[in-house]
Amino acid sequence: MDDCRLYVITGENYHPGRSLLDVMERALIGGADILQLRAKETPKREVLAQAYALRELTQRYGVPFIINDHIDIALAVGADGVHLGQDDLPLAEARRILGPDKIIGISTHHIDQALDAERGGADYIGVGPVYPTGTKPGRKAVTTDYVREAAQRVRLPFVAIGGITLDNVDAVLEAGAVRICAVSAIVGSEDPAEACRTFLHHIRLKQMDHLIAGSTCTVCVNGREERTSARTVLELVEQLNLSGKRMVVELNGEIVPHERWGAAPIADGAVLELVHFVGGG
Image 1 (cartoon, rainbow, N blue to C red):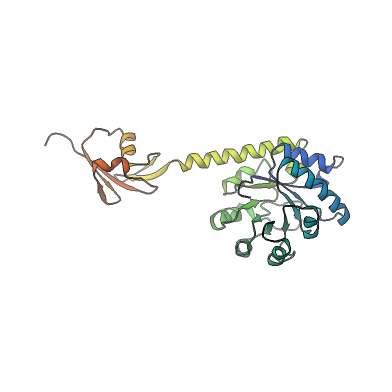
Image 2 (cartoon, rainbow, N blue to C red):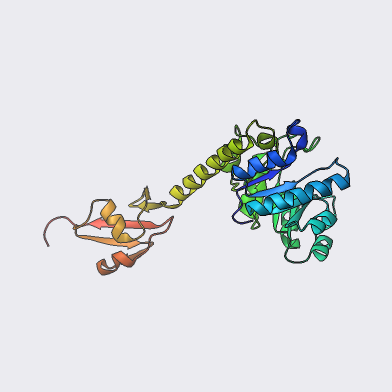
């Protein structure tokens, strides 16, 4: 789950006239890296047949296959795991049946449920619905506030889900999500492969933003905040065009000898005083 970025769930009602397998294969072609079979209203024997077909498809593409609710079907077809709601079989019982190696995901709608799932040994959680969605009629949207809280407090991998489209995915990513799940925006699109590629483009752009932001830090230099990519005192002095100047450097209250500038690390929030001596002695 750590490497998962785009989680796609089946939704046959969103693509009438197109086969389930064709639509889901298009999603896999577009880069979906985990697939879930969710068929709440479908007769169980039909769900079983779909599961066998999707298991074969996901094995061909080398992506995990998850089944919503039906632990027995997951075991029968050799699925990689199951996804359970708050009213489904308890997590501990599901783990006892499935064993330690299967993936178990849990839907959560507020932070207490997320932390319970984490303590209970879930492999990942769903965080949502972020926005109102037809897959969860009557369920109040948790908004990006819950996404932000989960990003700050939950150590488990989490997938933001519910009403996420290409028009609002950036706000969800900005709140801290790194894994996105979409249903109608992908399986209901004219070209699921292109929809997946576009979602992944948004996700990668946000990852790049985080990498760029993470490559700089904010320090206080002589009482003024500075944004810098410097990692040592020496690099900072060079960035400030002070190389070759006679000066004393104080880092977080301690003087750094000149010979140690190249080894003295600078971290976010560091406080430096640079005292530049002018003229002769």
